[in-house]
View (cartoon, rainbow, N blue to C red):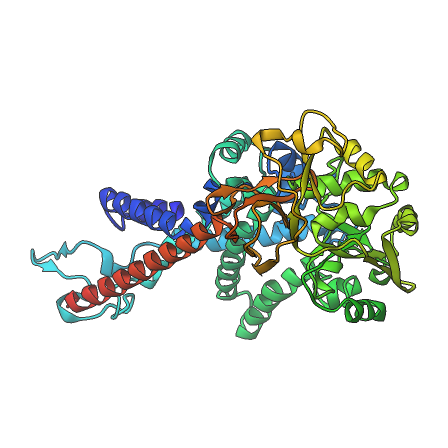
Length: 561
């Protein structure tokens, strides 16, 4: 939008006051159409932490020989240097000269478009030597050959405006792709810290798409202009030269573009054991815990390539998998208390003998261990008294959790512990049944734990009747009527869950704990209501804006002579 305003101002397409009004209207409409994003964030928290550590982790990289600025100008700079596919510049010794040729031709195309004089149809009428005023072509009912009869715009002038816009977009994309580096680094850092949602561009190299767009169009214009130069007496020579420049040059700069990056990328099929495991576990409300606990890892069937954990897309049940980025000294950026809890469990794995009971509050019914990377470090799974091995293949193992009790249950007592060690102590003493564990000032034993409840919680009744908890959707759970008390639900805790006006609290495991009356109710993630309201508002504003533009266009067409 800024580029359009700058272009219109430079070409004097509209008065500044009109441009200011248009810019304000567009920004306002855009903000209203983004309410489905803006509203929910006022009531909940993001699942990952985005801060200065992210900006440092995903910073645009420079070429070891030419540095940062030339690397970005050449459309490189992705933060992940490996392992990964071999880049085109790694196999072309003279790649700087190729991109230099591309840039020069793009600059030539831009220069040719910007320097064009305004066509005669846009000039002010001049007086003839006889003293009478001469009208420009198109005046008096005639249409100039340089003017479009339907729009009244000159193709040359439109191309000039587009060239200016592309130059603005390309230059802006280049400096934005530098991120917090270069002459505009301070401005980028300020926007990253203070402009809402600008932090989603924590990988600033993505802004290079704007520079690539400018290259694509301006390079095409440059090739078109060069093809019109009489490089030889025969026209065929000019066409051949254009073909070489317009086709061979870009392909020479990206020689690995064909055949899956020159054979480096190819489709891979999952081993049949994954289908067997999925058929064994079937569907249901119980979750799958996927191990090893990594967000990215290498599998034997990926030919050495590191990919995201394949479990979430391989099984029909909901999968709890690693969200730890593990890159460049950054272990994780997750804000999930559930993930933090699981990582502490895995760190204490050899000292645990009842993992099933410890992950049952998370709704884990199956544990799937893929035989890759550090899977041998999970050998302690075989020592768990409540996990039963139901499938063992060369690719993976499947364990069934005998302690799984459903998506939620009645809590007959609440236990306060200070940290994970207190919870592990309870597990060793088999004192986790029918109870929930919350974090408090100090650990308590099970005999008097119901009297020590943090955060103003009161102990549940002694009834052992378990109310039915039914999952209606990912954002709603129905709790049947019954004796009043506390109920746990296996959904990961986020700010915004409530039942009958009572906000849910987090257990030590990172799940939901909520007080329920005799009538039960529906536990809802209330920010989802704001999401739906945002969708309605956004769609409504979009519809009104589209109708307004259509009516305005028709009105202008009717007023045109």
